[in-house]
Length: 322
Image 1 (cartoon, helix red, strand yellow):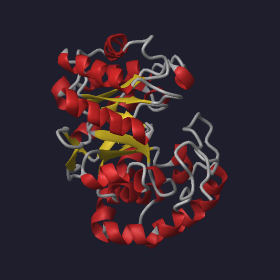
Image 2 (image 1 turned 90 degrees about the vertical axis):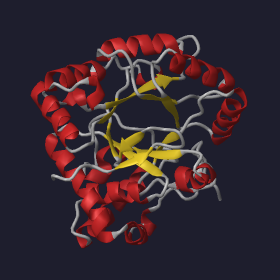
Image 3 (image 1 turned 180 degrees about the vertical axis):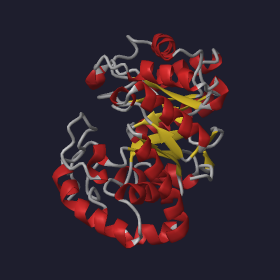
Image 4 (image 1 turned 120 degrees about the horizontal axis):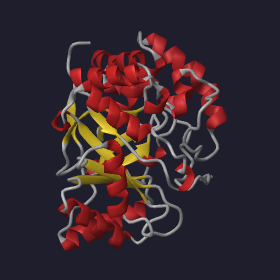
């Protein structure tokens, strides 16, 4: 595919980013060094050099993974300069503030081998958090030049509003995007009342993640690796829905992965879609989603996949609404 990946703005005041972003969880550590270098180079060639890279060492992700280190090695071997790609880091809240944002950034940047990121995602927590402290500490890292913008990952909607209001009141940098589970089968968080108002008003952009449900919606119905949480306990229903995903994809001359990506991009608030690939062929296939979206159109894709929405009655905490 010779055409460059288009860009969209990652929320008000956020950066211009390619609509595709490559994740690091269970990706770079599943490739050969040569395969990782080839993937990095190809992503840069097509304009998709946006890499979400985290150090997985806290909470349920205390895995001692080396995926971030391997990414840094691949980028350097591929010959990419720091200005040739966008780097999105992650700040975890599970052990915060005992593990400060400053300490987390020190470790993460050193492991990757860079001096700064472009943006970060702050996310994943259980229970209550000190939103004002989070916004203030994020602003301190921005002031140091560690990154320029930030987003939230799976925050309770009340905390998002609190962060926006506090940042506005104090003249601090607000979050500009939300990284949420969003795709053919999980839509409620983004399209329901939780984040819908913020997306509709343009206060936040959407970064869609976990689009393929850990590979299930790409045809790997029994994933062998660790995958994301099954909010609401609908994974069996998702596996059962895969034949319908295949059928719809075939009807529009596309692969299931292309259909899933095109759907995620069809949401007006979607700035980009975060996915993991461990082979160059997967990236090439994913690029075909752009042609599918152009050929079929967002409205038609949403109409044909409307019945795949499986979490209509699930609340963000995993409980069901009657």
